[in-house]
Length: 220
Image (spheres, one colour):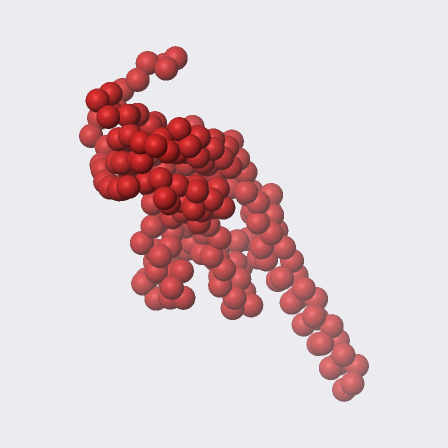
C-alpha cells in the first residue's frame, strides 16, 4: 500500500512538473511602425498577468510560459478593463492561443495578429514668456530628444513658432497609441521638462485630432 501510494505521488509530481515546464514564445514586430502589444496571460496555476509593451520595428519580445497557458491579445478597451482587475474571460472573449508543447520556440509576427491601434495625433499650443524663450527652447529640445531616443511609442515631434510672435509655439505630436502617450507623461525626462518650464509657460492648449490624409516624399 505504501509502495502504491509512493508511485502515485511520484507520477503526480512528474505530471505536475511536465505541465509547468516553461516554453519560450516570442512576438516579433515585422511592421515598419511601433506595435502596441497587450497580452493578458492566464497560467495553469490560476495566476493572471498583464504584459504591455510597445515593440519597435524588428523588436522581439519573448515570454517563458507553461503548457496550457491561455494568452489573450487585448485591444485598448480590453486592456483598460483588465488593468482594473477585471476578468477578461467574463466578457466571453476567446484566447488568441492556448500554449501547447509544440508551441515551444514559436515566433508570432505582429502582422498576423490584427490591425494596429490608431495612432494618437495631438497639437499643443503654447504661449511662452518672451523673456525666457531661449531657455524654453532648450528645455523643449532636451525633452524631445530624450523621448524620441528612449520611448518607442513616441513617434514624432514638430515644433514651430509664429513669425509674428515667436513666443507662440505650436507642437505637432504623434504617438503610437493613447497608451504610449500615457506612458510618456510618466517618463522621467517629461517630468523634468514640466518642472523646468512651469514658470516659463504662460498658457497651454492641448488639442486631440484625427488624421484625415497624409503624404510625404520618400526621402523627406
